[in-house]
Length: 108
Image 1 (cartoon, helix red, strand yellow):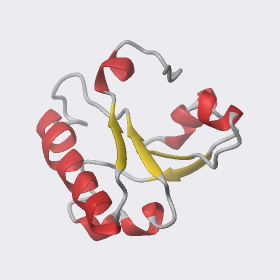
Image 2 (cartoon, helix red, strand yellow):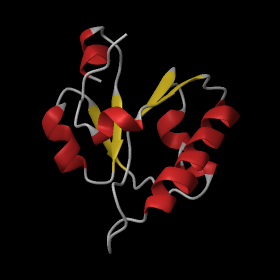
Image 3 (cartoon, rainbow, N blue to C red):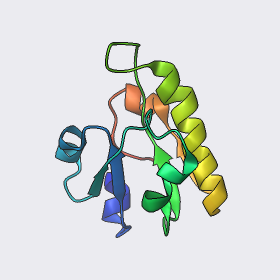
């Protein structure tokens, strides 16, 4: 995301806990949304309209009282992808490995 910001792209970050996420990229716009709770594609529409691409780095490392991996990795991602498809967003990057490794930079 930092490289997208450097290239003068408008970057909108979506996170369940924006206060954590925004610390690493304060120049991005931040919206609070729980990927696992956004159960319908239309939950995403207000945040995706006018967006040229999506980079998904969301993930849950294990089930806990606060996170359910299936809700994030299967249901949440499927809903996000369905919303992208409906809105005609063809540029979608699903980058769970980089998120798990703690990397925040995008590389070509």
